Length: 269
Length: 254
Image 1 (cartoon, chains in turn purple, cyan):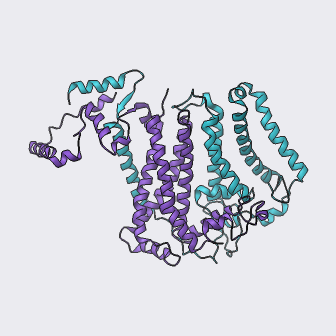
Image 2 (image 1 turned 45 degrees about the horizontal axis):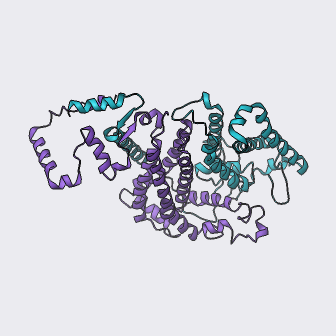
């Protein structure tokens, strides 16, 4: 089955001097020091390249054909992770141009749209990528459920996946406030108002008055650093969005992927 | 490439029960292609559509309606039917806990690694209806709710009005007048009947499954199914019979 793809001996259209130059480059010490195995065109080399390269060794040397089919996996887990990487890169670039300060944040957004070269593309990619990641992580969960891939031995990895879904939502939600426009401001106001209704811990929640919980010491106050969305909420959202939540998500993702490597891709027993 | 290598590949791929292929190049190729595809898609989307940016945030100017991001709008829509501590805290918390519990209550190993409906009808239906409910509420909240969280057809112009703040939990002043709540004994009795019958009935009907699951797993499943049905039921009670609260206490209302 796999062998059908292997007939790529025919490279006769490449001029011979190109082959000679390529051969020369491949024999230099520098090339060999970077690509230790060479082009993996034989089975031993294919195994070796997966083991001896840092990035490749994150993947197994061999994978089950079953789990590779698009109609089985939808590629959604991988795409979610790729979007996370894309969001990290565009996010770091956005951090060069954005200051989370009450009187500056919105002006920086305007600058990104009208002044910064490619700023509007940068922000659009971050925004649509974030919505995309929320969507693909939900699709990933749906796929894993329908294929029964949370069955033993993968139960705990599903649980970690649920936490990663929650973190994705929180990452997107904290980013929503940062443009400091009416849309994000009021969406986050609505969202964080819910926290004030938490039983025992929110000032509007049941039983909280017996614990001395008031508007200036409840869980919502801890989240937004004030009694309403203001400069403190902005810097808190920024730090959680750019540092805290990505670190937690990365730690969980490392675990999530490691468990996939150990348990293998799900497939028929 | 020598012939022997191709043979080895083919041998590995065709061995019964050992359908594996080398990650290089096949798996890496799939990853590479989907990365390129997603990058192009993201780039084209970003060229075509600008991310929304409204006017600068202003505390004194409350938009009506103020909507949460789309993935949380289902919870905001639930504020019509539940107090904030249920819609905004209890329900999301139970969704997360319930999702985490799935692999620990559904342990039958027979159907894994393939799409299968016939051997897991209940799991399939319950999960699918949960996902459907989540997105159904999102669509209602995102596209059909206008000022004061009233129902509006999509694309219709909202009536011009002030910026008076109407908290989404207390919408519809006029329709609120028609709502009434059950008295505490009635509400408690109805809830007790709902939950005890809901817990007991499946035990009597599906004896085999109850034996398989055991009392703890069964209770966890049944409670979460009943809570989900309770959410739908309370929505229907409100819409059909105009009941605002089923249980009214001095401390909280449900």
